[in-house]
Image (cartoon, rainbow, N blue to C red; front, side, top):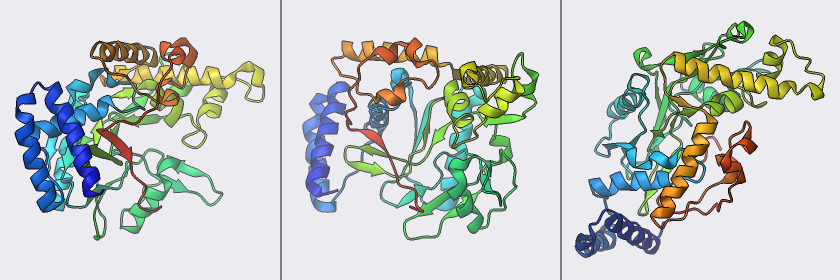
Length: 358
């Protein structure tokens, strides 16, 4: 980022921050200091409250997230002072425990130093390994096939199961990546069972409780934090209609349909649709039975519409990616399906990183 671009982004964010937090009287003095820092050092440091509010506004601006109604409630763990590998891993383990919160999931972000070249290699802190078989099939989550291979190269021992949690891999710029297993006492895997269809329960499916995204860069005021893992809680369809159902993921719809006694050769039987509904019901039922916070797609849609109304009252336009906001199951039955959206990227925000092996 050029010095000019940094200065422009810094001023735009700080003006927004100080205006929305009713601190306009402090802006000029603060802006003067930021300009001097940029001129002398080529960068600047966000104050604690500036970082805190920036993470929240970045969530507010996240076009692909349906759960933005609660953007003000983000818990911010400021880890910018940490540098050693041991302290970085400890902070990530702390995040997993803090966010899980005994099942009452807390929206949480951990922000690490933007100037030390720290990066988390995993797409999410929790994720299942994938193992390619001789016939080309994959055991586990195909999304993580390359990451699993990289972990094995680093010395991690594969376990060859369908739901093996990968270690967390951290890399500092110019250094070899380092991995550590997540302590078992921090891991909560929800066993997926159906309230009425025993054959689905017999598949012994599992999923982890907390979706902690770790491969996105947080940009606030032109400062780019490569390591800033964050989480909300699951919407059921993320697991039941995508992770477990997509053909390039666990691809379970044909198996579930056959367990239900459906003819997968007859498209008119809508076997995919029927299997999808039951798989999603199993996910919601199982999480709630386990006492782990989750939301169904109809409730999430209503919350997003409430978010849009609240933002309109504040005089702000809501930007959104329609293809991400509309749930992957029964989309037309939700109000978001019938709502026009502008996919305009605002700052602060979260941006996907390229995989290191790319």
